[in-house]
Amino acid sequence: MFSDRTNWKLTRNRLTEALEEVRAGGARVLDLTISNPTRAGLRYGEGLIMQSLASPHAMDYDPQPKGLASARTAVADYYRTQHAIHSLDAERVILTTSTSEGYSFVFRLLCNPGDELLVPKPSYPLFEFLADLQDVKLVPYPLIYDHGWQMDFPSLQKAVTERARGVVVVHPNNPTGSYVHSEEQEPLNEFCREHELALIADEVFLDYAHDGAQQRSFAGNQDVLTFTLSGVSKISALPQMKVAWIVTSGPDGEVEAAQARLEVIADTYLSMNAPIQWATPVLLEQRKSIQRQLLDRVLKNLAELDRQLAMQKTCQRLSVEGGWYAVLRVPVTQTDEELAVDLLRKKFVLVHPGHFYDFPSDGFLVLSLIARESDFAEGAQAVLARVA
Ligand SMILES: Cc1ncc(COP(=O)(O)O)c(C=O)c1O
Picture 1 (cartoon, rainbow, N blue to C red):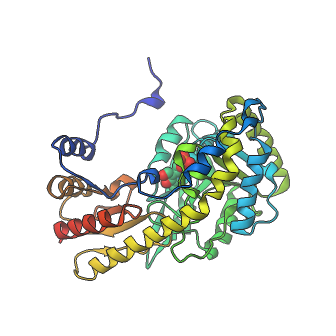
Picture 2: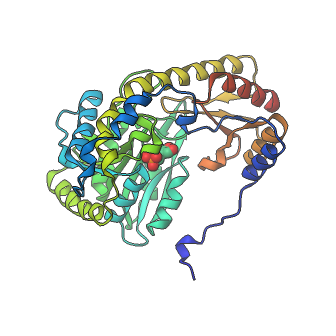
Picture 3: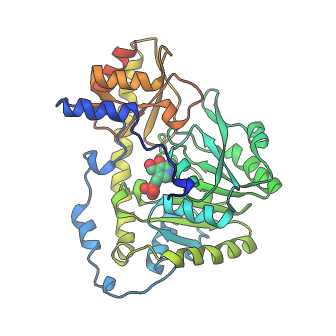
């Protein structure tokens, strides 16, 4: 009765089962996988946010496939003020309800069934589902770790086939926290040009560079057809508000052709609601306070982790440049999933095993750096005590 594309293995994994059992037993679990910022004890401008959702303009239905001009202008302003991209035309912005929806639109635009997209590995597990739903095949290209994560261009060359339509970069990547470095951007453009591929840049964590320096956004990339995806889910830590976007850049002819088609895809759904679009300038403005708080938290947790790591020799932290996560390298005495289950049952600490993100081998745990500082310190201590 159902399509093959929904033939997923829907049984719970061992970690989820263990979590339910431990919680049912009444234990307090220290959650070092937290990615929901609304439950991380941040101070939001609640009054302003709620007020912004009550604009009387929202009583008018003005169906705009790309989204309302005022909201798209606020997005262009974000790129101008935060990323010094002065030439970004709001007409090249298309609003979506989430980055995931943005991915779906772009996959639909670029790929026939069975076409391929090159995606980094390790990375974010949602890609698999997005690709299944759009009948697209993902071909991983490894990031290699050698004093920091880097793109491996020989592997990229090996991975590309006639069916490839685009390359996805996550800038910075989740969970490795590595940016596409400035010296990698030109070879990446060259690679896309050579194979006639589009570039899809996921920049949801772009603003969370740990050294505070702004990293270059792909929204300013003019060399090849580029789709830059982001949204307020991470930029303003408001995932429940459902405002995201696709910025299209590159050679004019290609951008215009892509925009015209994307507009039809967006028009088919018209998924943005009016109150949220009128609120978008205020939601984006919230980033200034939220990013300060989150970066402060992330840096303090990272410093605490390093302080604890300095007292032992068994585990190391991989280098990280940005984002909300840290990767811990641990000795391999069991699978990462077994280790995570063990940490949960014996120490009541929840961490993600590396295999969840497709790390090349066992021996990696992923810790969220946006956990409350006291939880993080206690959780990290429990993890190190168990692993050591
Ligand atoms: C790298 C990356 N891209 C996209 C998303 C999803 O963003 P959105 O909530 O806008 O769909 C996430 C969520 O964690 C993410 O980590």
